[in-house]
Image 1 (cartoon, rainbow, N blue to C red):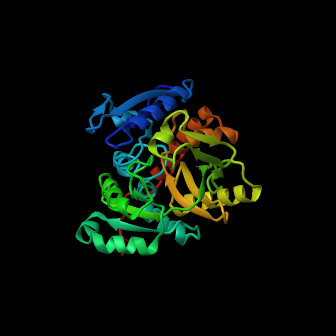
Image 2: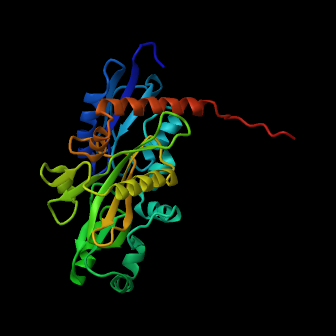
Image 3: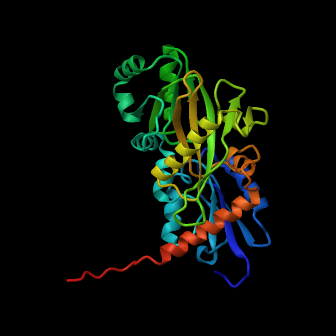
Length: 337
């Protein structure tokens, strides 16, 4: 730590992701609400070309707070860089960040952990372009309309389409492939969209904390990019108007997913709940959830008794605790012969 009595927190934001602009909004809130009596806040911006705008030396920073959403940031790339630099950082590590970003792999792990997912298939770009007709036939046989087509490695509903007819399927596939080389085609269901904020405990070995459940009611056909980030685009209900049993099940599943994907620090776990059967389906995990004024993660935590400022202090403290644990690990090995 530096000689100053305050902890130096570099807030890292921007980057090459299509979610660049959302990162700027999230970072503005994090910078505002970090406790200035405890932390010296250093904003560090990456532009869309990956240029860093801050004359800083990473070893002189006590901890990094990444507030970067989507690819080239939330997917484990920034986390890997920080691991190599040996700098403590807030949130999930390389593995959980990468797995959480890939909706296909995350769902495989969810299924292995006993958490249902909506029926889907994953298709790689080369496979699709080589044999479109066969894949279209497979999709039409496996699913009924409407269905959803989405990039496997994007957030904020970027590249997502709701497909209602066979005629619109191919264009939706090509649109999704503009944002990723692997996409998901999933069965549309009459579902409520419910979310849980999960926060790792400062006490080693304790279960993570799961917030009250929040519900998203988009004012569009689905929870699109515009619905997420336009005031009035969606109704956010916290706590969700659901039964205590359903809330408990969602919280339990959220903790199961958090642990199964090896998450650390924080994550927002998103679910679908079938309106007809009440069946719960895991949708995705966000390892760096939005921190804008409209974002569900901080709002669910606040509704659960953890203020925005308390949440940020908790996350920074946790990051530094984890770094101390890492520093105790052996880095050299001499074989005992």
